[in-house]
Image (cartoon, rainbow, N blue to C red):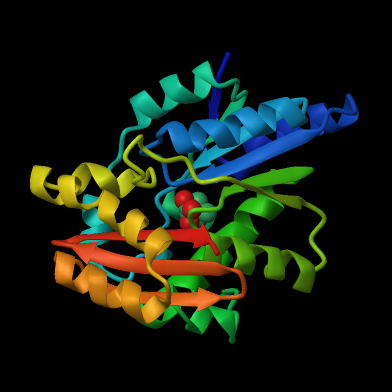
Length: 254
Ligand code: PAF
């Protein structure tokens, strides 16, 4: 049965019992508004570990636009149903005060890759992400933590942070889950109008088919996307576009 805890102390009490019994812990951090992409993270944690902990926390410090934070979907009852169906044992649902007892006096800042791509378009976003992930990893004390590859830049930065700060949790990346038409699952997809939803799969199609990043940018612009960026980095093409007020990100192997 899924248990809900709201405080660090409550989770630590459960964790101590699991550690004493020699059980491994898999952790899936989320901001809620869960979908089938999150379900694959829970399934992977369930497969690998004895105990599955998830968190649901809409982290205010990673939103660069207050309207995005205010309108971020909050669906805890449905989230609990999905987590229970995918074998999550405990969900940590903290308040902002629980997560930020010192406000933002202490943060984790990366000074290189976090300034590029999404970081160049969303000032402070990755400092907010890395700070909350550092806190969540410290709280969880998990053997493994699971992140989706849709947020490719986030995944690389979390891996770098774990290495830089000698954290002991193994970071596991899980493949992007897509709609049958190719659109990557995202909690923000519910905000797309019917016309935007019809156009959205072209984002993935163009990332896949364009011969180079400049051509992808041009094709997407012609189709009606506002392009934040499309860049080829190493063996991956990463992009972010806006349809109306909704921002979509995606990436494909090259
Ligand atoms: O990917 C997300 O949902 C968030 O960025 C995360 C990792 C839960 C941190 O708030």
